[in-house]
Length: 367
Image (cartoon, rainbow, N blue to C red; front, side, top):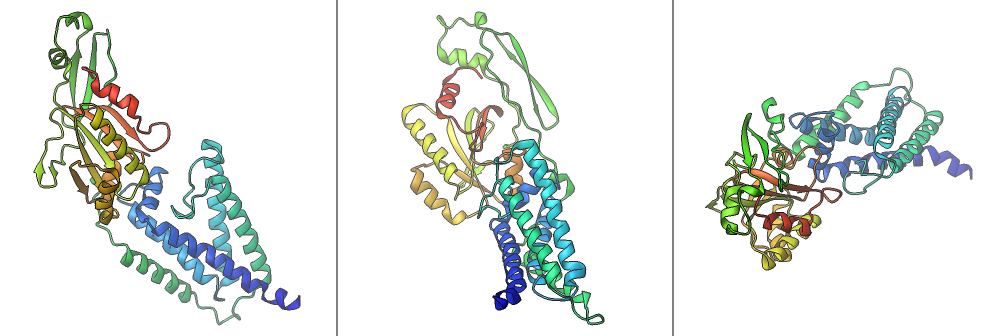
């Protein structure tokens, strides 16, 4: 019994170290998910996210090492770690108040171990209690033997490993701004409406005629569709026109533009639904914009989904998420007509892809 009590502080140190090490490793794979979380929370923009994400992960890795040594352990390491966890608890409390205790993944262990805000809060409180126990039962180095430079070395080494292992291309401040989102054109049945479509700081007025101007009973479907056809605008996808060596104008006519991740199961499910729709209905051309992540899984993606859609890889991950939209997640499916976004789906919750609704919109002769 005395032996366990004697070694208990060391065991607690190992547990705390393992928690922080696990958190650092989990946030690193994939690191873009943690970067996106920082952007979605409004903590930084896409230019600052790569730096801040690596520095935070490096701090967690440094704590995992520093908690096992004695230089300024009680005077600095443990108090700073407790303050850090208290800050996280305050943030989690705000998330619980705004979005609910069991909604979403807090990101504490990245995508490896999804945790709700409540679960993360409980985990942090337990860790704080362990740190308080450790503070009362461990000792620092003898006065005069403390070397703060050791702690600095641990952190800078940890930061160096993060920036070396996960390199990235710095962006300019202008790149951090989200592109202008083109609003959906809603159904205008029996209504004489003018819709304003914005793109690249310009606006175009689209005059949608009412049904009395073009009687359905006497005019062919193709003429009706032509009458309702919106004017050409430049979409946020217009810069991408090379799909597997073929030049395709996304803003010409009707297109279905998908934003997928090769290894994303939900993206594959959406692709399968599009394949099924294309076999039963007359579909516009489907184009895929892949995120630059796990590209080796692209052949597997097409083999599983039986899709034969042209694709293009977006090299810059922040750009991919800017195209997807603020706080949006994959899979993204967008229906475009002459560059106008008629309908957009994203994620796996309220705005997820709805095949039945989608085909109704596609087969409609007007936007």
